[in-house]
Amino acid sequence: MPQISRFYFAGDFLPFEPILAPLAQMIRAKPGQYLAGPGEELRRAFYLKSGYCRFSLLQEGGGETILSFHGPGSLHPVKCRQFHFILEQPILYQAMTEAEIWSLEPRAIEELVRREPDFAVAAVDYHTVYSNMYLARQALNARMDVEAKIAAFLYLYAAGREGGEEIPLSQGETASALGVSRVQVSRAYRRLRGLGAIAPYRNGVRILDMELLKSRCAGGLAD
Image (cartoon, one colour):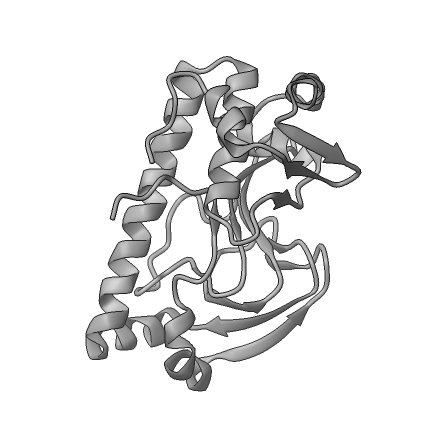
C-alpha cells in the first residue's frame, strides 16, 4: 500500500514491546528534558512508551532546526552499532511532554536485528520511511512558496498521526521544522484560517478540512 511521507513517527515498533522491555532502562522524562542535549553524543536508542519527543539539529547561532517528531511506539534512532558521526554532538533529542521512555544500548538493537527477522524488517522499513521524509523535506524547500510549504507540512504531519486533526505544535516549532520565520508561519496561518482549512490556537492548530489543506500544497501530494 502506498504511503505518504511523514514528519511524525509513532507505532512503528509497538508490536515489539515485549522483546524491547527486558533490554531497556526506563526513564521518566519531564517536558523540556534532554535525552541527548547540546554537546552530547547520541549514544543510545529511545523507545517511547508514552509521551512525545522531538529530534532536532542545533544551529551554529544557537537556533534549532526540528528534524522529526516522535510519539508512542517510536524507536529512534534505530542504531545497531556504536558508530560516531561528525554531526552527533549538534543533534538533540528532547521530551515535549511528560514521557515514559525506554533507553537501549545499540548492541541490544543489533542483537534483536540478528535474532528477530520481523524486527529487522521493521528496522529497514523505518529507515526507508525516515529517508523518504528527508526527500519530502528537500522537495518542500526546493519547490514551494512559504504558504504551500507550511500547508504541506501540516498535511503530512496530520496524515501520519492518529487523531491528526489536532497538531500540538506552536508556531515557533512549525517555523523551526521548516526553516522559516515565526512571522511567516503566522501570516500563512491567517490565510489558511480565512479559507477554513485550519483553526490555530495557543500552542497548536486544528485541521478543519484536510482536502482543502492538501489543495494549498504546490503541485499536490500523492496518496
